[in-house]
Image 1 (tube, rainbow, N blue to C red):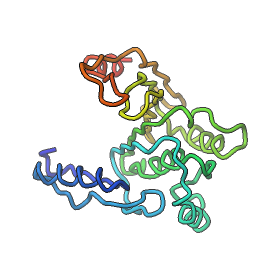
Image 2: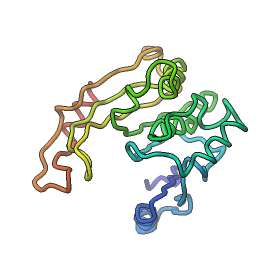
Image 3: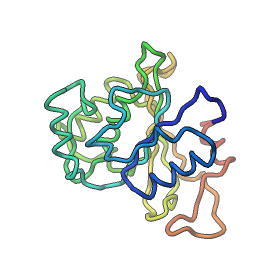
Length: 216
C-alpha cells in the first residue's frame, strides 16, 4: 500500500514462497524487513506483537511433529497466555494451532480490536468428539465469540487439490448486532471457470462472485 503508515508483516517456512514475497515487496518499493523466514508454530518471529488485520493460509492436514517440542514447551510455560490457549489438537493436523495463533495475533479490544481470516479445509469444523483437543479448541473460540463468519468456498480452487476449503473470519470486537453469532455462508456456487487449468485449480472467485459473497 502506498500509505506509509500501513506496514505488512509476514512469516513463511517455505524458502521459495518467502523469497517470492520478499522480492515482490522490494520490487514495489515497500519495506521487506518485516517478512521473516521460519516455522511460525515453533518460532514466532513477531512474539508480543498484535495486528489490525491478520491473514493465514496454513498447510492442510500436515502434522506438527517438527514443531511439537517448542509448542508444548510454550504451552507449559505460558498456559492461557501462550498462542495456544484452547489446547492442542492431534499431532497429525496442525491447522487448529494456526487457528489459535491467529486469534492471539489480533489487536486487543482495548486498542481497537482486530480482524483476521484463515483458509482451512473441512477438518477443523468437525474433527474430534466432545472433550477432544479439536473440540475444546472450537469451544474456546466460540465461547469467547472470536468467530464472525465461516465461508464455504467452491471446490477446485487450489493448485494441488480439489477439496473443499473454508474461510474462517475472525473478530474480537464485533458490532453489537453480531455479538454472540456466527454467520455461515455457502459460497460454493459463486465461481468463474478459468480458461486454462493450473494443476487442480480450474475455478476462481471473480470480482462479481466476491461481491455476491460480501453482500451475503
